[in-house]
Length: 263
Ligand code: ADP
Ligand code: MG
Image (cartoon, rainbow, N blue to C red):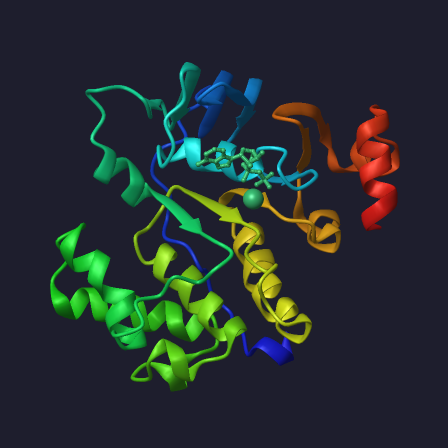
């Protein structure tokens, strides 16, 4: 689209993993407590390769907690999560390696403010993946071009708009060649006029075949690219439906009420 300056070409590297019958993300009866407070109750779902799943629900329903459990940013007490067959809560699992394959984009862009855009794009490639500097730079700048920001390579995050910073954050995550991408309300801290340019990148990524789990209330995005919609309330997955079923008529009253408020 013209407004975001997106260039054509694939945003993702050919994907590893995703063996037949093995979900890219399997969430199996996950329960989590913060002290006495149960934040997740019997959460189960599976996301297969190339699938785009939107997670929505009221504030405080556990969406961020669930997504953080997927790359072990939060521990959980009961149940299991695997990413491409690897148990995230297993002592034997190499967490830095796992996290390097699971791209994560948060509400706040979290670029390193003291590093240039190029340095932001290359740091983890060099330190975690041990890519040679030239290769890391090439991959970073290639992705920067794909999100329409080539002109900003030597700037610092503070010189970019919120929408531009979030596009850099997405490019930075993609530079690690993730096998799945997790998004937690990536546009909710942005000024309204910048939401579209970030969603455009996410739509392109979805159409490129990335496996994505996206917490968002942008139902336009969900309608465009989601395969399924998960609705959470009070720590439970209340609804896990195809997009058409969810928007056609959610089964639960709670989801119907939620939709009537945000649509
Ligand atoms: P959502 O992303 O859907 O808004 P969260 O996953 O952030 O929900 O939070 C779910 C619930 O867990 C909320 O009631 C929140 O207050 C609580 N919570 C989140 N993080 C913590 C924490 N570190 N300690 C205690 N309670 C927490
Ligand atoms: Mg949240």
